[in-house]
Length: 271
Length: 296
Ligand SMILES: Nc1ncnc2c1ncn2[C@@H]1O[C@H](COP(=O)(O)OP(=O)(O)O)[C@@H](O)[C@H]1O
Ligand SMILES: [Mg+2]
Image 1 (cartoon, protein in one colour):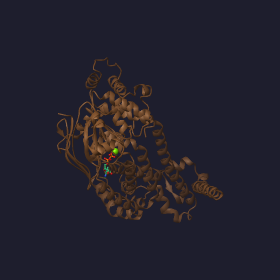
Image 2 (image 1 turned 90 degrees about the vertical axis):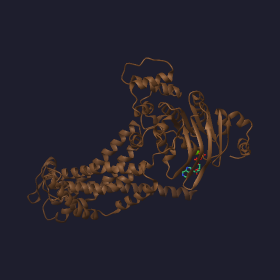
Image 3 (image 1 turned 120 degrees about the vertical axis):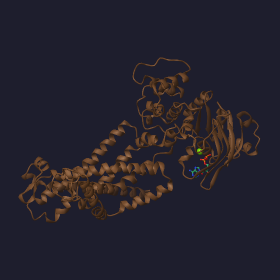
Image 4 (image 1 turned 180 degrees about the horizontal axis):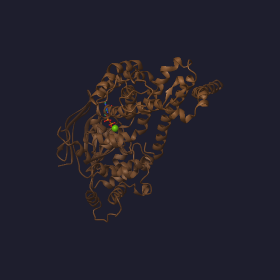
């Protein structure tokens, strides 16, 4: 059973229906890219997975989203633990109003991890045992370092962990957001056009990081940049006007699209 | 081209002139007050005026301590009562309530903010004073109800609309991404409010409070109607008090009939200005400190 699967998902804002009966399984441990022209419902689809849509007034959702077999929209579903399973990167990063260090430690601290749980988490992450430094918060220090390394940010910030995260460049902020999301041990990462506010070099770093992480996490990336999709996608979902037009492994999707609209979109005739 | 340049320099001059004018008013007021207080300062020392509790204008005995304490205490009570309630209301409206409900409450709050001070005062006399009297009796301290507590409550009610609406605006300017990024970690709405929303908006919240109270200091009328106006240091919440604005408003009519009285009232005004100025300055210093830490 796939981690994430959508069944007949329809979403409306008020009377405006923006997603029409979408059904698709998102493959594990791969990068799935959701593409489509702007306004076709990509963001809506992505945020329906972890119920960030709840932040909107007047959204109605029909159908269901299964995360590890649990229906996200079941009124009895534990939304908090479902959200914890799905890390999220927004279009513009938002560094939490605290230091770089605290941005990473925030999740584990709010979830009240014990010393032993922190040590176990690092062990699971690094795949080896390690020496916990004797000092106060030694384990947390190691945890913060591990996740900053995992997000490819450690070398740039190791000398200024205690400075406010808002002083980082926007590209660094997005990698910090990635590290922060990873620190609560999600199974998947959802990213909504994570590079659209970034310069090309920072964008490249994020793409590189996703490719590096794909073995251990299910990654879902929304983009409207076809070239980015070609670069990183293992699996592609194409939305057009709120409809799921076509989905499949990246190779066959780009080489031999089945639907007329997909062909037109890939060749740049519609955008 | 020439015309545009000319218009530009005209506009610049005009803007500068307005700025000078506005600042000059504050300056002139301060200077005037200071000049007017010189007669009383020539007769008694500053420290005596500030620390004496004896108030007998006819004997030329002016001790401002009760009034200063009254002002500070009424303000402190109002802050303690209003700030938590206003912030929680703003948080509820911003983070929990439906958009339509938020719009409706905004309208109500704006209407409340526009109600004249006298009307609040009347409501205070009708409702709050008796309530405080009953409360005082129940707690074993008999009171007329015209008291420090009644003044504090009225002031709290009056500053609430301003603080609530400014705080709400501040919360709504925090980008969506702040909420999405933090909720996605699996934390509760309250945890998000505590660690992210409040911290991100510290700046604006302090501004909201300063704005509320800057307004409140000027709204003498309502407080004056319920606070009792007895020039003694209040020893409990149920004792009457006499804040500085009330002193000035009640007595400026007869200030010419008693020697030095006018100078004394000007001195009261000067203290009030210093207190309000100190309050704003304190808030600015806090903001500066927060800014330097760079978390907002
Ligand atoms: N909060 C909202 N309220 C009403 N309509 C919305 C809201 N958010 C998005 N929409 C509409 O839903 C459609 C899909 O939006 P979105 O999912 O953001 O598309 P995309 O991310 O592909 O650009 C658009 O027509 C947009 O105008
Ligand atoms: Mg979008």
